[in-house]
Image (cartoon, rainbow, N blue to C red; front, side, top):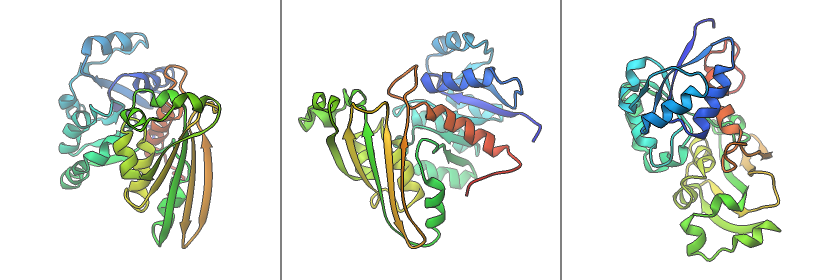
Length: 272
């Protein structure tokens, strides 16, 4: 494909700026940012200038006017406001803050009604292709075991309400939670996009099991995926590394979005 893919960034925090840094340094201009949707327009414009990015800073409601893919890289609380206008207009959204989708599942219905595309960038989680394939027959169980740095949980009410001592996690893994993907997303809405992604691609949010440990001995989040299905048994682990700009965000988040954008425009597409 030789034409340019137009992008509106829905949010311009750490992830949005990582994407901007990559794309403004790409001489091919195959992926081009045409606007930034942000609540704090002045701050977003100042940050965009650091990358030499001279594009309009708009409200999310204006995004459908740009005929572009909306790349949502906002926050849990801002997720719906960012993606809903584009979905209602029948556009294409690539979403990152998928934890918020667990409490906004009607957005999937809106996308179906309008013919929109709601795409989840799942590059931070191993094994999604094999789960998609296995779900064409029968999947018996899906379990996600996640080891997360304790600093990521520092302000989570669940930790304080359950008397979990994160100081102990600096020396060894401390159990934090065990339950369904839906429950994990409810207790840790800003951190468990991976659990919601896994639930949606496989056997559902209620049947997908999640185990969470606080673990300060690792360089970043570690996710181990275990699947039992009629077609295959799978166990796969990914050790993710934190973003230098924000150690609570995996480096893979922004790269996952870029990979999704490039795959959408590729002639040769690998993956189910």
